[in-house]
Length: 225
Image (cartoon, rainbow, N blue to C red; front, side, top):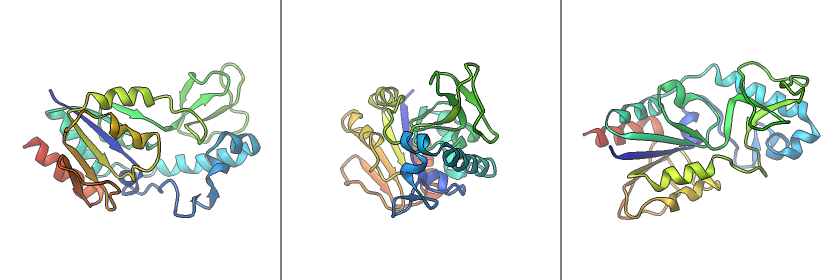
C-alpha cells in the first residue's frame, strides 16, 4: 500500500472558523506572540497565557471538521495515510483520520512542568493552581517559540518514506516544518493546496490555488481513481 504524507497548516482549520495563528503585524488576536507563545511570556505573566489558551480551547469546542478534513479520511480506503499537522486543534481526529502527528502540540492537552512527558487530556479551562500528581503547575501542551519541536524527528522519518506528499493550507514559511519538503524521495508527486501557494513550480508538483474545502476533495478524488 502506497504511503501518503499530508502536511497541514492553519489554512485548513481556518475554514472551520478557527482563527489563524497570526496576522501580518505579527499579532495573535491583539497580543504580541511572544507574550502568549513563549517561555518568557509564560514566566512573566502566566495568567495572561492561560487566559489566552482557555479562550482558544473554548472556541475549538464550538467548531467542526470541514470538507478538507473529512476528504482526507477517504484516502485511507486505498493508501497508508499519515497527517503531519502544524495545527494544535483536534479536527483531523474528529474527522476520523487514524494517524496524526502534531508538530506544535495539542490544545486539548496539558502537561506537567515537573515532567514534560506527563500529559493529560484537558477540555476545561486551565488555571493557576491546577497541578499534576507531583504538585507542579500544569501548562498548555503547546510548543512555544524558543522550544524544541519534539515530534520533528518522527515527522522527518515519516516524510522520508512517503510515496506521495500533500501540502494543505500552509505558507511553508515556518520552520522547522517548512523544511520537511527536503526530506522527500526524489521525484515523488507533490500536491500543494493553498489560495496563495508560496512554492516554486516543478515537474512533479501540482499546485491548486484553492481553499482546502475545494482543493482537497479534488486531489482525493483523483488519487482514488
